[in-house]
Length: 267
Image 1: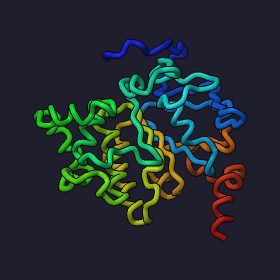
Image 2 (image 1 turned 30 degrees about the vertical axis):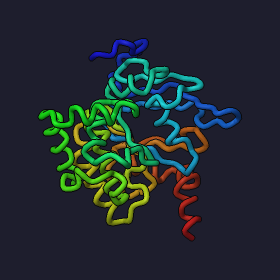
Image 3 (image 1 turned 120 degrees about the horizontal axis):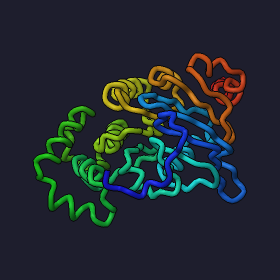
Image 4 (image 1 turned 135 degrees about the vertical axis):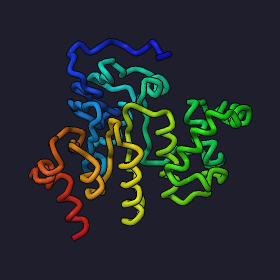
């Protein structure tokens, strides 16, 4: 592993892929996360649910280095990672998708994945891509991944030309190209129809979470319960429940805070 700046080592020796201790995140007067404790075992698929504004995306942002936590510690494979830069965390083996898509609309589908593979800065991505896009190994790996996500025939399209479901497939491919140990998915089926959601769930099941540790944020309960071994529920920045999908979805606090609010909204 090239990156040496990985912080202190957690001495618990429990083998967790991810361990979060007393994590808090505050933005001025707003407490987005409050004393969150969480462990994710190697190979586990954890669903992260809760109402809008409950802190789910903030938690992923802190894990991936977008924000430095206000308080608490994060350990990835027993190494402390809070305080590291995003690119350092990526190199350790954590990748993610975003609720609001982070793709290069004016680059081709192929170019988007090539850039993600090489962790290039915005400034250098176009120049380096044009210089070395024909290297055999890179091209072969990218084309294989494009085939897996169903975008091979659109590899020369500009990303902005893709419909939303395909843009989300592209972002998933951008996260997978580095073969991460921990994959963070923020609403991978956001904005999709039921049929499109079913197709995305199948894709995530087949190529994203198999043999990989994963945290998934999703509001669509059919998808989250089908994919996840365990659920963690946030509300107003605090963890209110954790357990198997069957246990969590019967929890009165969860029914009131999350599922109950959705039922009232559709009543």
